Image (cartoon, rainbow, N blue to C red; front, side):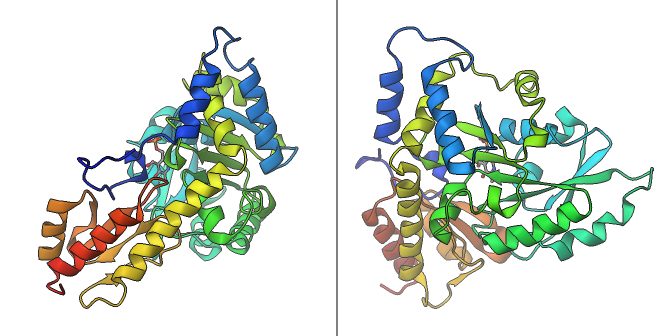
Length: 348
Ligand SMILES: Cc1ncc(COP(=O)(O)O)c(C=O)c1O
């Protein structure tokens, strides 16, 4: 939790602490010994909660981190001569150090987009190489929900993409590091924007939503599930003391804590927008549809604001910065950011 000596942080929802209910759940799981490698009651409970959210045909697998969950998830769908189509901004393309390329031997094909989101029109022209033995064969389309640009796919957009993908024999992967924020923004269940929209394999993140460190691979298409247990172990993501990771998921999936945390983070981003929208010299680079705001600011304002708050520059050439809120961002922190933005723009 932040305290008076901690400067307000808008750099990442990964900078946030652990939600007290998650911390309590970890402590409650620490009751002596329990079977290892997932044969414990917390993992069983987590699996039940996941099936409740994503459907009886789905299977969840505890993972340590998002990169690992993405790599293991993609490994269920790909052979080494195949390729993944993804937006150029995709985390798997920009922030995972080539993990999929290294560990799976597959090629990532990044596609430039306006807003971080892929459509069928973006991918269909890339499929002309199907059957051409000298080209890596696109077999998976990977999208992020929320996208790295803070934008969300509606259920209809995902379903349209899934139809196009499946009609050409490809599969749809979703990186759901911020799936909770998308569901809260769209007013949808987790299932509507995943299972019901045609996603085959999902990686679902809890770490940005208040966990200490917990991610999950969720296989939504049962025909892809046969080797997940083996690939998780070989992919170095099998937790021995799994109960402590599962307990975090149980806490977040109980009584909708995941939703409350995401809705709060989104509301804080909306509060920033309301505070800075309309200020001269400030414009929003992407629509704000989650817990991230991408304002375009004059260079001098960015430099001065970075002396007072933590945040990243997203696109230096265009003066775009990224402000991210979390479950523990307070109204006071947001209001201080807004007041400082006004001040550095000489608006008092
Ligand atoms: C879109 C997206 N995917 C996945 C991840 C997970 O990354 P990590 O391997 O750091 O848990 C992140 C973390 O920032 C992310 O933003």
